[in-house]
Length: 233
Image (cartoon, rainbow, N blue to C red; front, side):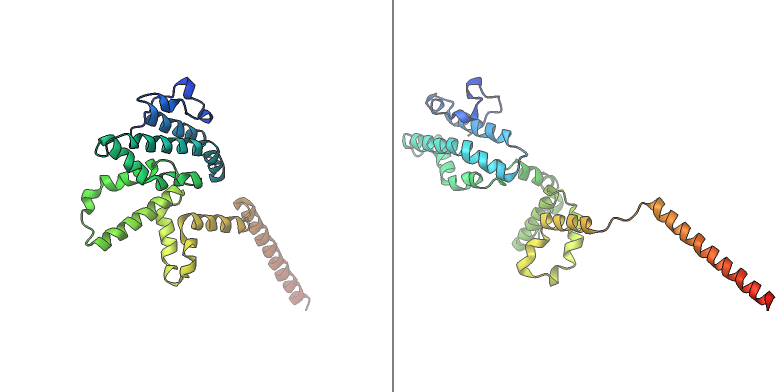
């Protein structure tokens, strides 16, 4: 089903109002239902996972339930071999996966971010046509996933890999999640905050110069005192 990118009509702009009447309008039901769901998602973009989950449970879940009921009703009226029936069946057989975002605020409604992450691999695929074996392909996919996960968490992949690969052989398997990009980033930030702040460079230099002057004066006075003692003796 194609979701229109055009703005919603004014009578559909309020995502809280539901769309029972909308479902009875011929030719606009499914696409407009999707547009309403995405309209709500746009209002919570950038918010915390807990806030997104609360809004989804309150506003999006009723829309999704109505959409599911509508699709099941319309599929029963269509010939099983028709293109529309196949499209509806494709969605309904994957309904649990589609509605997973309703119970987890961390999940995005669309996979646009994942597709953008794969763009670099798609552009350069001519340079790595062969992985050697199926196992090599699976390992390459795992590495791509880890690198892109690091980027999504604002972590430099090269710095992260250089830091975690060295202790990896001796790291406890039960605590492997501590080496994942977001956990590694949090531990580095905590370590940085825990370090005592060093004085500014000029203050350190001034302190060093002052200590040098004191030491020089002390040695000078000692030498003068020794000379005077020798002369008096």
